[in-house]
Length: 222
Image (cartoon, rainbow, N blue to C red; front, side, top):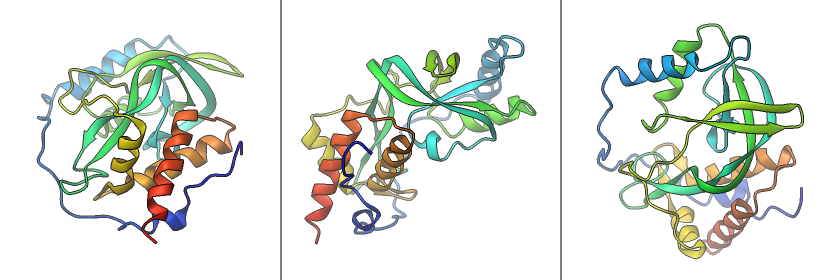
């Protein structure tokens, strides 16, 4: 660990574990054909014998939601972690809205590339797509100690209705420290992500600052 982690389970537990209130649906469901057509297009772009890799930058690191057969620490350039999607339904509510983490343009991002199990690949990919915002994934080059792989990544789109550029750090920390939804708190989400990255020797300076400032605010709760 590069420095002492300030955010802890004890601090996270000062918040409610979850709340039932959910904000209105602001994003209409995509047409039924979106999921199978997107999955087919992505699978068809995979060279024979290479398998489908997914770049994980947030919750996919500790909750991949699909069967994996291989995982590597990796770096992607041209994208960075950013809390750039408004959230009043998942880890936020109308009273305490949060911000979902995604990959926004610019910079670089350390994370993991995860190879999906090949059997029933289309069904697995469709199921994964349904857990993410309906924005088609982009192909990225992920560099690891075992070589570079071409992977799909769930990235932010400025055209998506929930997109909202990340605010200044202090304002961001105020929002994230208070946000709780039916899936839990943003503080818990941040802690899980930082811990798993740190265990793999991946240090994200921005995320590290965020966890420190969120912890500072939770400490004030007493």
